[in-house]
Image (cartoon, rainbow, N blue to C red; front, side, top):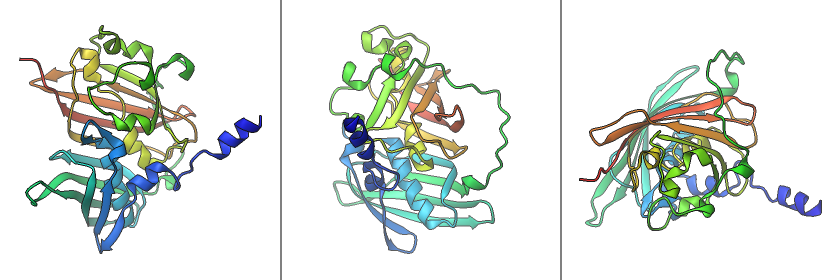
Length: 287
């Protein structure tokens, strides 16, 4: 009993967690922020796209009069690296219920040239002011209990090399979407999992931007190996998530011309649909 109480007390909280420290930005001048992108959110040498979206999302939440992301659309222009970066923001419109802004993240390449890594256009508001009226035909994904699912420690790494981000997360993957790990992909283009942060921090609107892009790619279940870089990602945050683990479901229906789409849904512990996303990603097909 005492051990359980100690573990509960040690849980990180919103605002005081590894995720919060690693997405913290420093205001340098009006609209300009500095950050050191953490190597803890990488897959091999590339910084995870969901983590990057949360970083820019935090900067926009500071620059805009509203704090909660409602819709965020990002174009990934070049691969980001761990290390120093600059974010430049611009307030496009400040309205009564919604504010819109844009932001770009820049780094220097090996020749000392400034390179734009990612560009975002987003609208922010106040999620707590929304009416509590839900009319939906959507249903939470059917995922076995966490103790009947599997984490990254139970199987091979998704791609060769370091995947530091898996140490930051608590993922429990649905066995029905793990055929790729056993050499027998289902061909269905589905991925489902329980999602949380490893230090126990509960989800908030900002961490939802990470959750939609934190699972292994659906391409693995289509029999395609190797990582799948994001070209464009749009996230809609529908409400503030309740405490507890999230369930994430991602599906792909069409792979053509070396590109596929991924549609994600994120559900909270009260069976509320809290975020949705769609991304276009590139796949490297065998020649």
